[in-house]
Length: 201
Image (tube, one colour):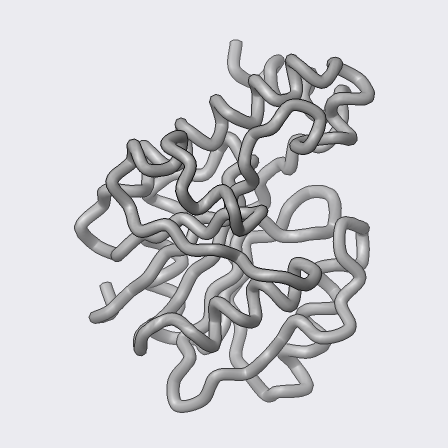
């Protein structure tokens, strides 16, 4: 594992009606918020206290930095700041201390410590790493950030089937080598949720 390896888990304050809004259309706001809270809790407990990396929680909106729901994990809590997802991830990549950085969301229920370890291992051989989602986006992105920090999130179409391709285009333009992890499911709709639940039985 690289020295100074840093994992950032991006989370939203789990307010009713403000998280997993597409999922809420199929399951209802209460069930969608419950899924988000439970998945966030599971992911943070699985990856948060692993000694192979330092974990921080990046929260939105910024005022949620002081909410007890995040403080209970005993992890550093950062504000995501303003801007779209690319602006916020780019800021994290620029501002965190020296060392490789891996960013994940908190709403991918199958993320494990093994996935994070695999990503940091890949950054020992490559300059960028992605975990593709089955909807055309990605559940993980990481950068070695050495010898330079490149902003790979400009002009990306977020939350659609083009997200990964757009980001990889930026990576290619920057001349970065890339490693790809396995595909995981992003649970955004009722059908996504039902397929995921069926796999748990």
